[in-house]
Length: 108
Image: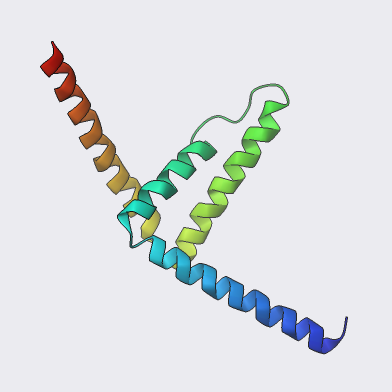
């Protein structure tokens, strides 16, 4: 690979990284995107136990690794975004639970 090809690849990677940071920033400003990010992180099992004692451990650790990578990318763009996401989603889930409980008491 020539020096020019290497520099061109570096520029392409730099542009992709810049675009990813910009896209991430924009997602963090959108409530619908934030709920989607939260759902993805829940599916990754970042707060769950990965160890199963069998081959599923490696699978779960892979999922968890993706979730941690997403959190790292969010923190690179905005250090306060993930804690804010956690707080907002906690409030959102509490409202949903409250509404579900209110619906149950109406049925009784």
